[in-house]
Image (cartoon, rainbow, N blue to C red; front, side, top):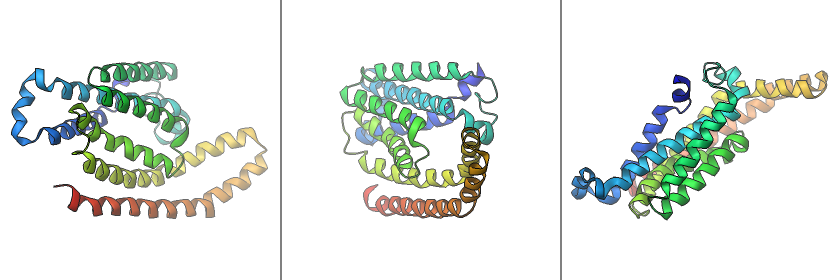
Length: 244
C-alpha cells in the first residue's frame, strides 16, 4: 500500500497543487482573498488542485513504469524495482489517475480540460520516448511544471496574469532538468549498453562502450551544462521585469 503512495511522489504532487493555488491567487488578487473561504466561489480552485495532484502522480507512476530497467541501476529502492509495486499494477494505477483527473477537469471548464488532456499525453510521451532526448525532453518537463500556474489561472478563466510566472518556472525547470540529466547519464548509459550487449555481438558492444564512456560522453556533459546555463540565464532575465 505504501508503495502506491510513494510512487506518486507526494511531495511533488503537493508542490504542483500549490502552484495551481498561486496561479489562481494571482487572478483573484489580494483583495479577494476572503473568497477562498467561500466554497461556492472557490470550488474550482480546489478541484483544479486535486486534478493536478492526480495527474502529476500519474505522470510519476507512468515514468517509473517505463523506467524500470534504468531504475534497477539508478534507484533500486523505488517501488517497482524493490517489488513493492508490480509493473502491471503501476500501469493500471497511472491509467486510472490520468482518466480520473481528465474527467474531473471537465467539471471546471473547457480550458482546464484541454490543459489536463494535453499534459497527460505529454507525460506519457515523455516517459516513453522523450526523456532521453536532452533538449526536447527538458522543454517538455519545463512546460509541464510551468503549466501548473497556467492551470490555476485557467480555473479562474484568466491565463494572462500567470503567464510570466509560467515562463519563469519553465526556464528554471529546464535548467534544473539538464543538470539532473548529467547526474543520471552514467546509470542510463550502463542500462543501454547492457541491452545493446544482449542484442548484438559482444565485440561491437565493447567498442561502443569505449566511445560512449570516453569522448562522446564528455561531449554530452559539456553540451548539457551549456544548455543548463542558458536556460537559467533566461529565467533570471525575465524575472525582475515581468514578475512583480
